[in-house]
Length: 196
Image (cartoon, rainbow, N blue to C red; front, side):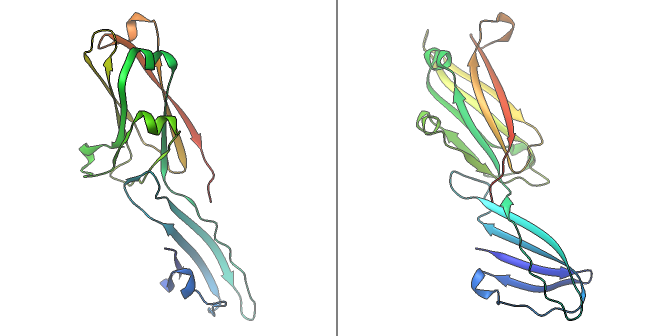
């Protein structure tokens, strides 16, 4: 699943698909080059599939040999979810749906954090692009006090690649934050990650 491209100011010079296609040495004319690599699966949303990219600039001079190492770092945006104990007492059948904002024209890319996924501390992997830089989330559940449905929607704007957004759902006692009969806040802990 690895692709490597080598280009110079005039365009693409070499292209390899899969590590088996890359020879042990490559002959290039003296010039300045950029080596780019892509690995993994670039899907809108997944629990397992991740995507990595890397880029390295290098120069070739006549009669010299250069070793080029391309560090491919994760290109996904990650999301995880956590509920505090008061929330799990207040709501039953809790789910958190997170995905691309459909207003951007994105057709897929929604994942649902069930209680099992939250207990497993699962991470969802999303690919963003110039049209879809926002992720939306919808918290759903049933109020334990009266059995009525509860729903709250929010948005993560301009999410960054190689960053995890940890959604922490909390219950507060502040009346000004009352939503649908329950006092719920969602905090977002944003952390840059290093995965190669």
